[in-house]
Amino acid sequence: MSEALQNRRILLIVGGGIAAYKCLELIRRLRDRGASVRVVLTSAGAEFVTPLSVGTLSGDKVYSDLFDLTDTAAIGHIELSRDADLLVVAPATADLMAKMAAGLASDLATTLLLATDKKVLIAPAMNVRMWEHRATQRNLEQLMADGIHIVGPNEGDMACGEYGPGRMAEPAEIIAAIEAHFSELEFSGAQPLKGIKALITSGPTHEPIDPVRYLANRSSGKQGHAIATALARMGADVTLVSGPTNLANPAGVNVKRVETAREMLTACEAALPADVAICAAAVADWRVDVDATQKIKKEPGAEAPALKLVENPDILATLSRLTKNRPSLVVGFAAETEKVVEHAVAKRKRKGCDWIVANDVSPETGVMGGELNTVHLITGEGQEDWPLLPKQAVAERLARSILAHFEKKKAKA
Ligand code: CTP
Image (cartoon, rainbow, N blue to C red; front, side, top):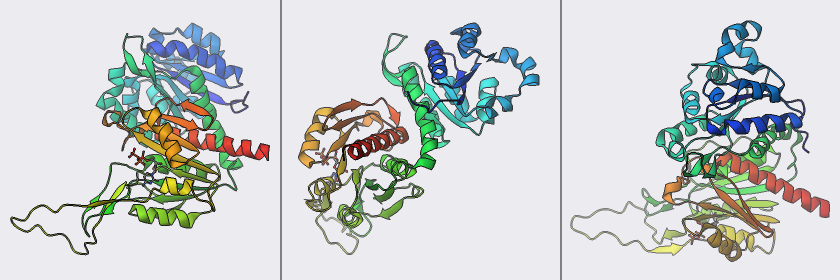
């Protein structure tokens, strides 16, 4: 068992949802791993689990608004969060998320969440339509922009009889996210990927039509940049070759900004040798076969210009098939809109990469440009289906898989 939770102090805020019953199991497992758990039960949460059962499992007093007046004398709001290493909200209801996003402090739980400077992890749980509602997604984006970590929700049958995303992550998944948080803190000192050189492509490419127009796609670069950040945080020497994005350069990463697919390939080749290459860019498959040095003019009555497209170099396939300087681990992404895994398995073979991260980019998923991603990691050894996660969590999980790969390789050598 991991030692990551030994002597950690968790402040668990239990919101009002049917998934609150899972917090009992969560408390037990956290304490089994050596953590201490102090629980704040919202008044809605107390409709689903009793202070008595929560307090028995946590071995501590349970804090709620009912005790507010007497408790503030003994232990103030600020102390409650100051005493914790991490705040966990499980279940995080649509209402709690909205209040957090708006910065409200209308009860003990929301006051603590606003008064803390500690990391906060939330495990959303709600009806599928509430989760998919634009308002909740907007709040989610705000919370992520505010640095809140998110685990889940999962897809499945719901207590309300519907099916879809909205089920709270299982206690084991929440524990894994909490452990990841603490091991990330440890990584900041230990740097387990020190000595590993990583090359990452990210963002779209812009293929010029003339000096002012170009062909592009909807990629934001969020996933590729998050991977660069995660690997750099674990100590890797990271070069990020990025197409045009609005994102800031990740800290501690060597960034090469390019416009076109051909420039991206040249920059990647210049960054070799590398131990691992991750191609997360949405490279334009085609470019316009023109050499217009002046803006194409719209002559009155003339026909619209016909654009002839020619194929761009495939960066992932090129890196995978290098005979000299091939990175020992080449990871591709597969952006698919149907038969996601089947197409990705074929793509892995066709491109010659070692792993492929398959994601569904059909418009209804909102993956392109959005904050969340559901991926399947396909390696030579099998397939892992990851739950719906923020891109930052996908990046951290991929970074940990890469670390495990290199540790296994080192152990074999
Ligand atoms: N890729 C690349 N260079 C290209 C096209 C794609 O490096 N010219 C990489 C992407 O970065 C990604 C993988 O190849 O890692 C798959 O990209 P995707 O757009 O899913 O596949 P395509 O090759 O474009 O195939 P299709 O459009 O037919 O799905």
